[in-house]
Length: 342
Image (cartoon, rainbow, N blue to C red; front, side, top):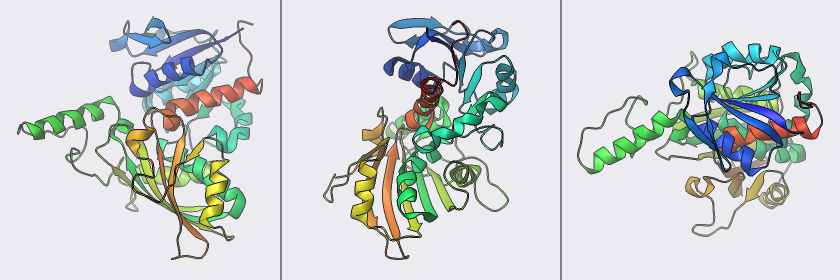
């Protein structure tokens, strides 16, 4: 017997990835129901070799649904996740709304799968920020070996992290530049084509942006509250995949060779690290892939027990849709949920 799965926000970038990944990984479904806002009712989406029509989130009855994979934005999640959870349907939410709630597990399965155990308090499980997800997958095995004290990370985040409109804006601006048309900025505060923007999300009182704060808070909740982390998050003119330059200070000695061997054995990680031109992974190559790629592993001699590395992952997959489906797989494989229809 399979599980009835609803996808809230099925017409968005992540919603479509969720449908693809459920099919690719052959998640045990009895039925998949795509849900969307009123303006998208009837819109067709693909699930494997099937074409499904979106239904209205506001009028859908979740009482016979087992899992809701939610990627419809923070305001929708804040309103609907508790209502859906109250009907006995487990919500796996991609927004930031529930990540910092002490009663809601924040889960990256390769890192802290055991944290799902507390999901019944609210019937909600949170997905981390896309930039956090790939970072903690890389940090976890190194932390187990040498205990991380401090992390300094600079991110190079693709426009797909800001949604379809942001991808359209990069395309339109790039075209406008080539044909000498006026360049319009609507989604971003400055031009993104052939440019970098050192701001993701709003500024906070201490000068960090909300995106940077998310990485700090989520890494502590997922991995270890003792880890000190500082981040600078930058939007770059790349369509898909986030990249990160990471410097880590450890309590215990660890060499680059040891780190490379550890990461090669780590779940969800692929090491591509040849010290030659092209011997590393770029965001273009990571797009459409499930792994978190690690390259440029080297010792950082500016601190005691320091390492530096380059980390790249498809933000729509591991940073969002794939991680959500992996959480659902943990629930099923550990028999934490059973099909209502069964």
